[in-house]
Length: 241
Ligand SMILES: Nc1ncnc2c1ncn2[C@@H]1O[C@H](COP(=O)(O)OP(=O)(O)OP(=O)(O)O)[C@@H](O)[C@H]1O
Ligand SMILES: [Mg+2]
Image 1: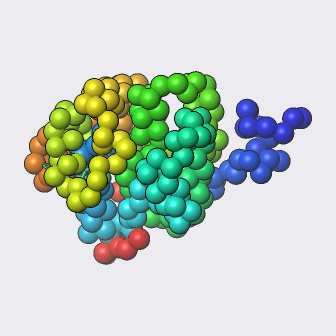
Image 2: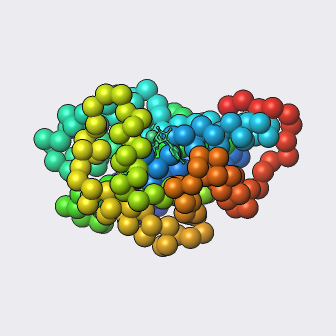
């Protein structure tokens, strides 16, 4: 049999794809949406709330979330790989995700922690979708091999009109806008549409949250979604990560 990544049946023989652990005890949640919707704020709030319920929980983010992936993140966001072209950039995002899954996400899930990730594969889909130019089959294969079966159980899509998100991102920012924040408003409108299209296609995984509400209302809507969609483990007092 040819060694390859096209069908996954030879994954054991290939060092290109590593199988995730057979049983993951924690729940994997991702927070998605355009700029300034409140993702980072709500990842922190959700993790704090889970821990207060005695559920061990870890906050992480993409790109990044592991030492090597954070280094790739800085270079990508600064645009240092732009000259390589968008296909090679997509490979670098995937490389960062593989390390993040291997070193941070799967070990945490395996020890029973819940993992709440600030952006994940839907951001790749949406941002690559807006940029265009990368063949959908290439992206789908890359997603399959980089996730290697570890997919979020629940994805919260924080939805705000592009103008509000950009305004919030600008207010929060102390330094210069990154390469994505500098894009025209049309880019951010399109991004929002793509996130909503993902949610419409995968309603069993995704919940759209109206993120124009006040932060505590958004937090409550997220908590309602988490408690309706996922089963909380029996609590055993305050938890850590
Ligand atoms: N519901 C809200 N209403 C008003 N302001 C908010 C709300 N949620 C967050 N903010 C504020 O908006 C700014 C952006 O929030 P945050 O950094 O959490 O968004 P983000 O989605 O992570 O942004 P980015 O995509 O740029 O990482 C922050 O200053 C934050 O305090
Ligand atoms: Mg953020």
